[in-house]
Image 1 (tube, rainbow, N blue to C red):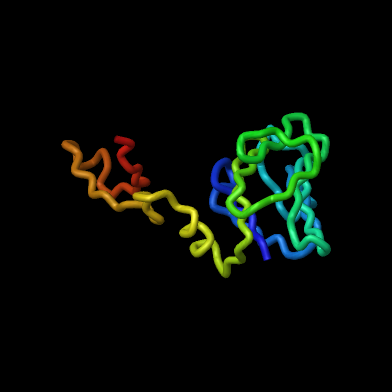
Image 2: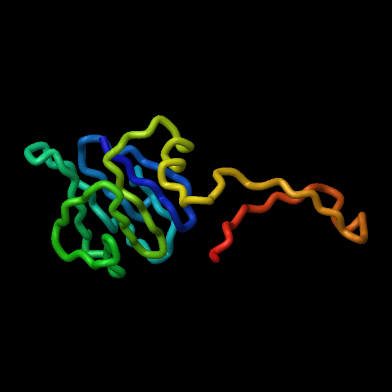
Length: 145
């Protein structure tokens, strides 16, 4: 069974097992895979499982801003392969043919080298103790050099 992982946008960190059926991704509340992105149509992307070929296919549902797979805009139904990067609106998804038991295992497979899976706890020692007296949580960003 395959999975869709949301790797950027307001729904970042969500993952959706696809099953062996047709799934529609968009902004509409009634959809099982809803993305809160103003540049995503109500029904934007269809991912369909074909029993004969045992593959998943992506199709743009006549969206205004299009569907991009691995940086190329699709016009026809396109077969998906493991680790395809799908961009709709301002949201980036990763298609994987693997099935995951939980969110943590799904995200750990796709973390970048050097990227941490949890926030780093830093102690804050301001000059004025009253300005901030509790520890600060921030996300570790690896050095790009």
